[in-house]
Figure 1 (cartoon, rainbow, N blue to C red):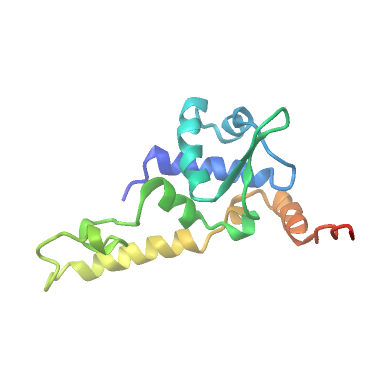
Figure 2 (cartoon, rainbow, N blue to C red; figure 1 turned 90 degrees about the vertical axis):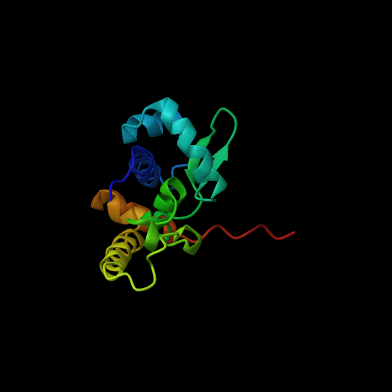
Length: 156
């Protein structure tokens, strides 16, 4: 199974946003530079990530993009599925049953191995968070920011 540039670049961009978690919104130009994703391509990738609720945007002079949740709470599998769709090394074992269109599914002798491949790929993607992919020194700071309680709201 090959991952397209869309999937690869989407994950790289999200890791760049994870590195900046807690610092406020980051410009697309900065994300593009940090992730080595061409800016024009990144503009196309950010919209589905935002629509899926993985990224938030802020307009204005200090605007940009940031993760909607802590990097410890976003699994690579979520990003992958937004960029690539369901894990499907073969059409007959897609995570989406509607995609399983092969007429040989019933009684297919090779399908069990493709199910194992699909499940192994999904497990690798779903057991890895964005925080797992960030430099360990930066990951400690991310963990501290995620655990810091918000300031209490002023009493009215």
